[in-house]
Image (tube, protein in one colour):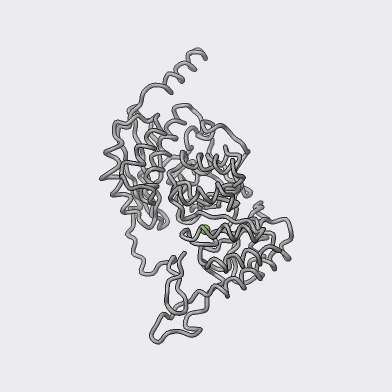
Length: 420
Ligand code: MG
């Protein structure tokens, strides 16, 4: 075929009306994860798109909502009308902006961008405007149970090429716990490790001053408070961290207390990142438009996918805020890639969170992004650039959420919950 004919055939293919023929819901638990993916099949034989509806702690509800409510609504719709379908999905359940509805929207959105990229013969980032950077820099997750161990963790990641390292003292809330059974407790009350915010502020501020002194001025240091502080203690921590010259301090406050960022902003030069738990525009909009934060931390899959993330990034660009999408923890390779394709194209990009997957996940999902030297690289294949081996996924059926304890439940000495 002549080149001109090839180009015409490709252009005609990219503009032919295509419908959603069927949607497979693929729920799988490789490496004990709880992932729900969709495969959107089109009226063109062999052309499909992939999406992730990752909401690990409500995965069975997501699966049922897809199968019983949303997939029947999608069948027969035109795959090219991504924005229109996003808007229609948004009001389909009438009540909206919750985690379950948002991840389902993101899943369809991702699959439709994947299909559009495959039709065009281009990676999705090309359809979003092309590369504004060569690769996506990541921040690494470092930790240690002592200042020295934290310094060594920073140095280890720097040696691998990372310029940005998030440091936690141990796990979730680490640095703020009184050990199990210690301290003044109510009779017959809670005996587990207890969070104390004054202890946390003292430990973490001292820790970072030491890390900065020993690791040197070059590394960009991050820390996640996991929303455990009350407003004035949050401000105090931010102020005490000023000499450590942080890249950012994340989630100083729970989402219910975002109005306090006005006071925090006015009194400290420590850069602030916020928004990991956000699902609603009323949460991120004032923080961005009033320039109360430096980095927005939403998870792309939890706010409705590429379509919504591009809009938030554009808003950030107008107000001098940068992105730092939350893509770690129980997140999956498809969600990592939707963030990646957005990151490549936006001037308001700040940094992306690191996430690594075991070999079985890479085997199940060929084309999953690769991390080299502190940067994330996609496969450069058309669409999202990833596939899903359904036979491998079927070997790991979705597991029940059988946790008897929950890492998100942190308690104080009197046994009350410390809200994240
Ligand atoms: Mg966080």
